[in-house]
Amino acid sequence: MGRLFGTDGVRGLANDVLTPELALAVSAAAARVLVAHDASHRPLAVVGRDPRASGEMLEAAVVAGLTSAGADVLQVGVLPTPAVAFLTASYGADVGVVLSASHNPMPDNGLKLFARGGHKLPDDIESEIEDEVERGADTRPIGAAVGRLRLADDADERYLAHLQQAVPQRLDGLHVVVDCANGAASVVAPELYAGCGARVTAIAAEPNGLNINDGVGSTHLDGLIAAVRRAGADLGIAHDGDADRCLAVDASGNVVDGDQLLAICAVALRDQQRLRDDTVVATVMSNLGFHHAMRDAGISVLTTAVGDRYVLEALRAKDLNLGGEQSGHIVFTDAATTGDGLLTALQVMARMATTGALLGDLASIVRRLPQTLINVPVTDRDSVAASASVADAVAAAVDELGEDGRVLLRPSGTEHLVRVMVEADSQARADDIAARIAEVVKGV
Image (tube, rainbow, N blue to C red; front, side, top):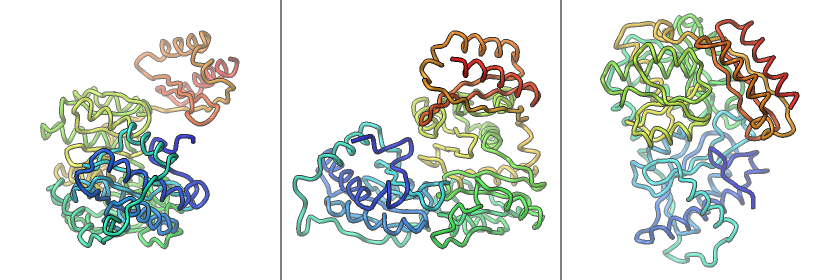
């Protein structure tokens, strides 16, 4: 059997790659593994989902799998992924399961597991679950040993109260337009921001199971930009389908990306003397302008590989409390165990309310350098990595750019491509240097 778990759970086309049978098998295996690790009590699982249509089918399969293996299930309904992580800890559950494909289109879906405490499932436990899926069950519980299902009628309230406590600053006077991507945040995000004092205009907040991420949300910002300008709002917030991330738009309609949001939050925490070790975690894809901004603010940057799992690993390993990605996936470990777009939006709006500054002025701390990205088809990614000519071309480019830019070569994890990324002090210079390196890569 090939590996089931990717970097963010099991994901694929619903009812094709991710079938009810697979969802049932993975869930039952997860429950059996939990029992094997701790047989002192009956396992409890929290299950939630985003509103895509296939979630109804897959949720039923997950509940069947868990209960068939003797786990009790607490069903929390349609809620953001970070809400399921929080509730896993809040209810003292042994595992959390969320059905969502995040920003992917509606036909896709995913199954993501959280360990006790709401943390990402360790790789060794994922491997045990995969082995258990392949092995199957020798025996199954019967009678009173079969798991039971109940609905959590206070899940929304618990999650919202947690977020309000995490950001005590009121947002009175701010007008925010929130694009909910017709996803999991469609109810809770407008309610949260209004409850914190903001005037809220909600768009793409009418999910019907089919329209999640359909031309809306954090990957399609044109509608939000137009709505902010039309309403004369102070800012716009764009969530993705499961609301584990957000991007923003300032009052003039300019996009504020994840690097800028992370910089705003880092400076805010530093000013409150709450930024642990005056260090923030970012990935190699963060713009060099972000690094310059943090350097000028006296904040160190710890850089990881691309992916929120690597950001989380670095935060936990170094006991830090803020990290994120250019995509808007930001983690505040003092209040959350995973990226939470609603928490990020609250932190940014609280900074606006505290300082009285416009979002555009706060975001201007990061002067984004022009960037060029070229995907170069290759037959052997390893030979490119070992090539002396490629190494010489990169070294020459790095020397040419100095502190005014940077070069990053990154092999694709899924395709026969090498990504050549160059940042420079002008777009023309970035284009020229990237093209030169790409030609060398093609010749390997």
